[in-house]
Length: 201
Ligand SMILES: CCCCC/C=C\C/C=C\C/C=C\C/C=C\CCCC(=O)SCCNC(=O)CCNC(=O)[C@H](O)C(C)(C)COP(=O)(O)OP(=O)(O)OC[C@H]1O[C@@H](n2cnc3c(N)ncnc32)[C@H](O)[C@@H]1OP(=O)(O)O
Image 1 (cartoon, protein in one colour):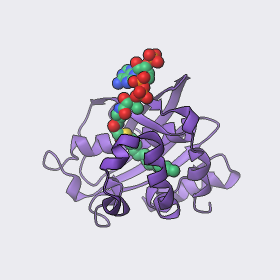
Image 2 (cartoon, rainbow, N blue to C red):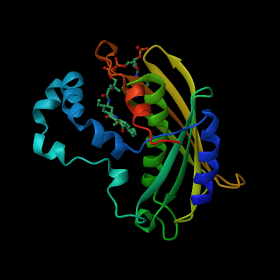
Image 3 (cartoon, rainbow, N blue to C red):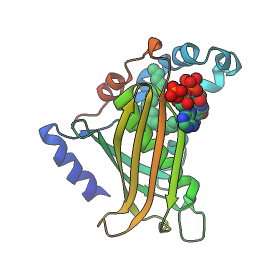
């Protein structure tokens, strides 16, 4: 994992790739924006959300103890509209004995294609996620999630991805997704928000 991280950090040196900040980095810096965001886009839901609970909110991929759940880092290539996620799931993500749970894989896929849609299109939500599980992924192995923005049609963003072994010899999973941009009149400049929260390369 460290070796792959260092290889991608090297690619960041010429600016072609960007090490994306973790959700926690963004949330810590911009937590005051979250209730404004919810109120702007989902005014009815906003009344149903307990403000105290919201302040305890955590993205669930970052809710496990270190090493037991989702360990990952993402890198973004703006020219190619690609994100590569280096993912090493922990033992608490087990489904079939010895392998990752399909829901855990779906979560990481959604997080990766979702981040690609966010940096490409702004505030979006997943409308559709289609996954083909082709081979089971051994528990605790390191995999690469390669996502690609395929098309933008008005408010719709189509992003595809695959999950491969690090040596690229095993294709574990393929997925396509549809994201819908929320009301553009209430645009938050989320791309800047995400990129400005990036740790130094
Ligand atoms: C400053 C604060 C910032 C806050 C965020 C901060 C930081 C974030 C940073 C990082 C985040 C990190 C990682 C991201 C991690 C994970 C990503 C997870 C994302 C999710 O986990 S998200 C949860 C699951 N997600 C939902 O909970 C959505 C529920 N849903 C809805 O809320 C609505 O459904 C919505 C909004 C999607 C659309 O609603 P809408 O009213 O805006 O649009 P409408 O329905 O008119 O559709 C417009 C056109 O899309 C077509 N269309 C729609 N749906 C379709 C479908 N399924 N298949 C085919 N076509 C479809 C229509 O047919 C029409 O097409 P046409 O225009 O051609 O007629």
